[in-house]
Image (cartoon, rainbow, N blue to C red; front, top):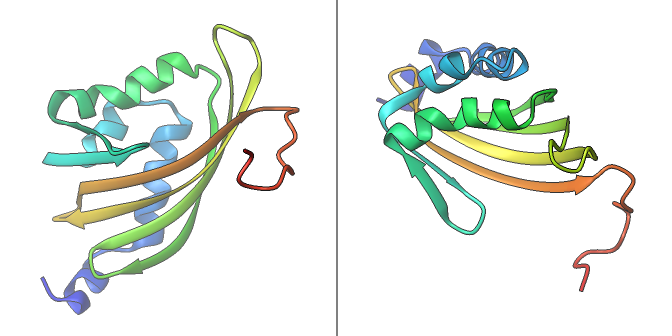
Length: 137
């Protein structure tokens, strides 16, 4: 589909808000419904999830981070790619420590569904010195 048709067929800000709402509600079914049948999530050191593993992932995350608070920020949309950032907070279930995350992600869309999702993040325990120079080696 040419870029102009994609841009007129989809409101990327509203699309991102729908994703954010599902995550804020910790609704695994709604979060998973946004992926196409052949979708792939790529994250971390090249880890991948697809198929049933991908569809189960949102609920598994919500079960782990039961008090998750997340805010997504729209950054750009071009062609079939929606770019966003997020900031989140939750309590680690084993340690009880408040955890913070910041991340960026790219959603590649086809027919209103995500077929490829690249996710990059940084996670730290609240109170850790996040101002240390990078790389911390």
